[in-house]
Length: 330
Ligand SMILES: Cc1ncc(COP(=O)(O)O)c(C=O)c1O
Image 1: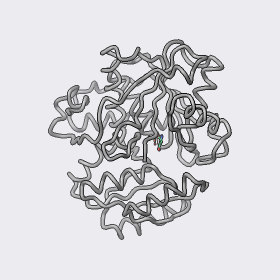
Image 2: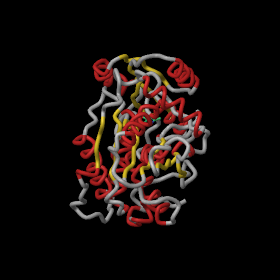
Image 3: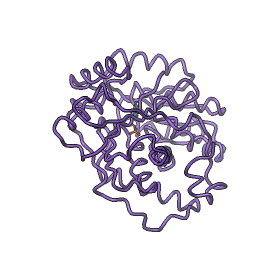
Image 4: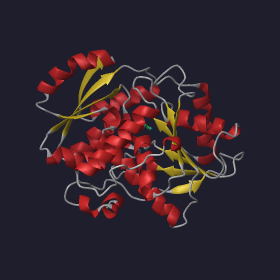
């Protein structure tokens, strides 16, 4: 299927590779059982994206990243994450389909059952795993890892490079088409988890490009090991604009990203990245019981806990809210 970005900017056809790895559009529905206190909360279920039985928000990023790795004739990707990295597993499995090997440098995070199971999957995936424990030690090890894996394609944690960001520019354009088709009302706000920033940066830019310029993107920051604030997310979105321009997209030189249409909230982080919270645990259980929605403790349970609190304290803008669900089946 032709990407919305290519339909919008046909001049990118020959300069920006894209491969479809999932079924679009992802389903949207009202969360009427879960959110009885709030008039209109919808979900866009990114967990349903991905053909390999492995969905979630990583897949859309890889649709833009993997063709670029091929274009640059790199045979290995070197990327980073925590011990239970969803991103690392997704890259390994999808890159393998393209004959690309993956090496992972992993830093410590609290180990629970969820992380243990993920580590088992990572070990079984065929990735080269380097346990670098901390950010500082990862930085020290990076030159060695670069040589050891013979000039790998380097990807930041979560795939949140300007190219990876395009995955959620695309998702926002897809959402706008769903709104236009009458599948859901135009959301006043979108709530989603922020782990490395690519998803929220892509949404912020994509909503602008799609003309949904009144929609407020609300990012719930669940990671304290990276700088994830208004400035860094805006800067990432701007780098994605420059990337599109450098590939020939006919974007106005001063594409205006409305500063007041993006907020980052950290109140549901708890003790830190990967540390479960009781609010998150409650949200996880309630979502499962009422909507058969599978959250996980690190990202989506905290984002859902935030959504409950924001709705209960009337801190959401008036009108429909969209919860962008980023967890996928494994
Ligand atoms: C399930 C889940 N939700 C949300 C995120 C956050 O997305 P991003 O890294 O683009 O901020 C991640 C990964 O980081 C994730 O694994």
